[in-house]
Image (tube, rainbow, N blue to C red; front, side, top):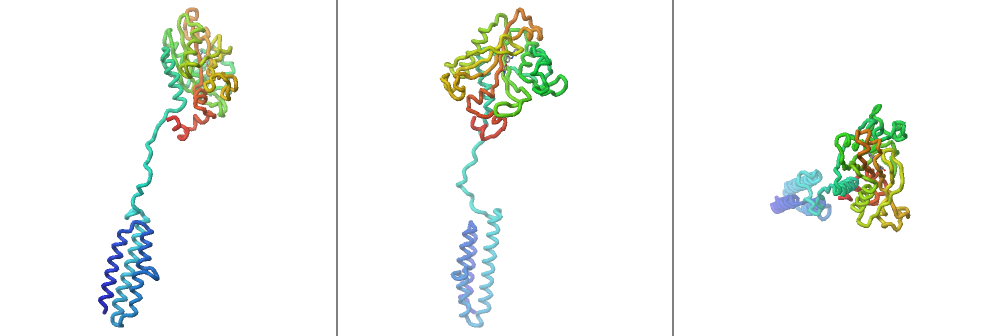
Length: 341
Ligand code: 2NL
């Protein structure tokens, strides 16, 4: 018997167990395996080589002890490594270098930003913001607006019909009709909301789009009030140096009618790619409310006059933020939207 050998084996086992318990990674465990069990330099391997020099009586007990320690250390290494892989039984220490999670920053949609801004400017001129149904009857959407049902705009190919005589409104004007039915003049309302047309969905058209219309009705309202109101609006939205230009146009529900341009918000009128070198960008249509519209809501067309206008806030948002394709406004892509936070 060689108590020296047995004692050295016990001490070695104790030391190996303590070291393995401290190990925090697979690499550390592998280093320990090499240190204790490595084929050439392993501490236990070296001790086992000494077994040959023991006496025949001592060798069996020392050999058995050596094999038991070798198996114990080897098993412990394997179990500890399995625990690390599973992650549950003491995995790698927490990685304190991981960046923290950023808090979510919500943002209003660019079209909402523009609608709210326009409404704020008109609020200063006494306009109230109103809403109404998106599913309408053809009377509110066309007939009341001096647009006969055989007009091309009322065609199945241009309008989403839900049932005979029922449709998705093709503009927000039915809300003004409802407002006039409900209230006597004077009226000043601003109507933002979705409108629907059977247009192909391309870079500059969407079948569902935001519209924003305005209506003012009172005794003695003239085209001068329309011009002054829209000039004030343009300065309020685009800056004090902005000017407006009216070009003759046609809408069934206004007479006279005009297309309204503003001096280019990017170049100030000098001419650039945004205004195609003209210095002007078209932002809305407008005009004096047609007497037939007043008659359809029961207003006295001899007593009252009024002006109305309509614009597409998405177009204005695209201009203002340099958005090249209208479809970006409908994709709900967070990478696009969070730029407006
Ligand atoms: C455009 C043109 C316009 C109106 C909308 C309107 C409403 C009533 C009576 C008269 Cl109830 N007019 N709305 C008038 C002129 C133009 O919109 O280009 N929109 C995007």
